[in-house]
Length: 226
Image (cartoon, rainbow, N blue to C red; front, side, top):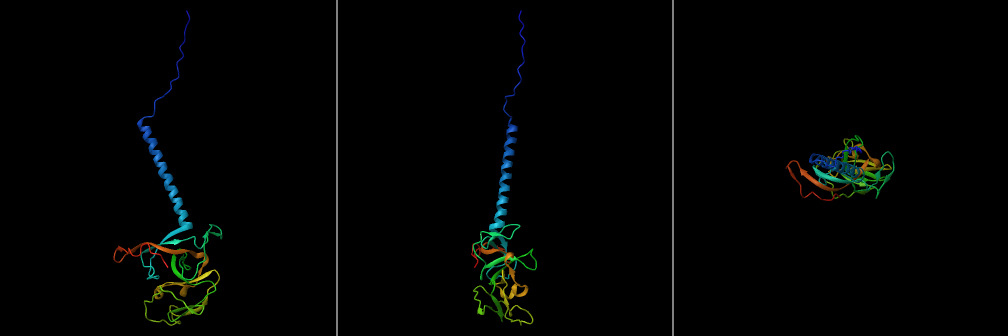
């Protein structure tokens, strides 16, 4: 009589994962997608902020009435050329800063602070103030946005606010002033802004908040800065 030995088959689990496993996998996939989206968004924001456009808020009245306290601005960071980190090289440069530009820059006396002023004198210009009137290279500097809110004229011996100079702007430097002439702390007091301290050109107001009246200034929103 012939014997037959049965060889047991290996057990193979062909069952599909249960509902709990499927939900867990979907949840992990969604979390990973969200994480990737957040990382990409952060990287894009860093690139845009570093090389293209940055937002700034006006904290003081030195540029009134051009810029009011509570105005929020966008600053073009590549128009003057974007600096490559850890080198002095620049790229994407469209033009040099020139007279009349409203610029954001590192405050020379405290680089941790950003200031915003208007360029009055470019490299090589001779700038002088005489009784609240500004002259560049011997000619009156015409600025339609300039305002004076103090009638008193301060002598040069006491304060350079109304009478100063003449001073010659050094190479790679700029003489800047606030449009609110009598209430601006600027190049008349602390000197020049070097080219490498300029962060960009202020070009548009994207938001404006009147903190005294506690309401938006809708007329300022979307207005170009000139």
